Image (cartoon, rainbow, N blue to C red; front, side, top):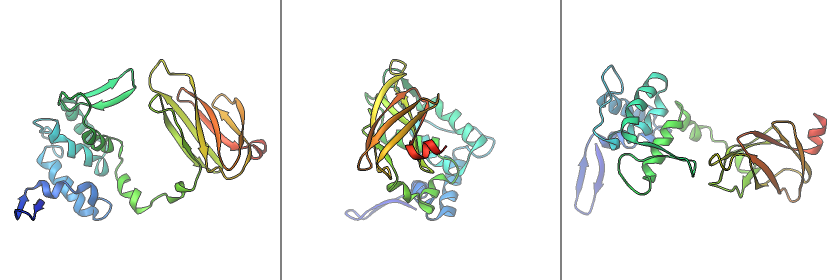
Length: 236
């Protein structure tokens, strides 16, 4: 199967990678083809079966790490990441709070595409990637949202709308930022007027919403906050 075809020089690059490379894109459309391609690559590299995972360097494992989360979990995924840790060079920058893979490339900045692919595979649970396309959550495009986050000093670990409340949590980039106060803007709230922000220790603060928008303040320590219209807060 062709990995690509160059019409200028009429050249077909025929390689088994031509079957494996489109796996991520085929998964939501032709899952049986995608899974067959993943099994082919996973078996060839020793991930499936009793043999060790065979990688000469980190680049050998990037596609395998990318695709495996969509099709396997448990022992298979554990086996994969035990092998990948040897080559992927996981690194945590304690100042920025940024976790990246260096892949042994000795580059000034971590390779963006490689990191994006590998982390997609790391967080993916079986079927989750296909589910995004088969059952897309389009309502989120009209629901309340958060913007103006002080990133990368602060990152949102939770921001979702559920049954009339916006659930939020802000994480610090490092220990020095832990517990700092941080502001952000909330848009598309359904009604104007007073809204109540409830912290995890039940502290309540009042915020005024106009035109569906308000600015709020959270504590960046990973704790949960809930923003609810005042009328709804009083009724509960």
